[in-house]
Image 1: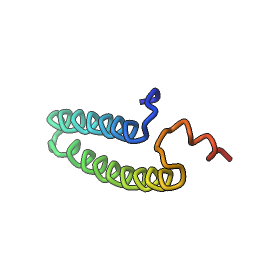
Image 2: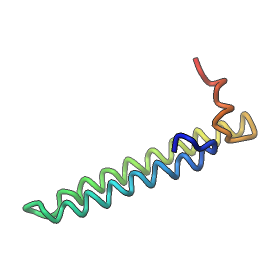
Image 3: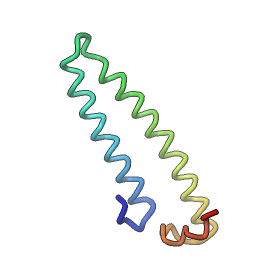
Length: 80
């Protein structure tokens, strides 16, 4: 993820990591007493991923409107 230069590729990598965590949570919920703990945590991760995707896409669209590219290396002007 850190070597990508395209913002959309970075977002897709983060989503894949979160989906991998969801698969682990659901698989490990099989070993709990109720069997739904991991599924509830997985729903929280899905909600978090949806909010992260919405905010990140809004930032990417705003960056594209200002710079006409989504190259992450051009973001060095955003440093404070």
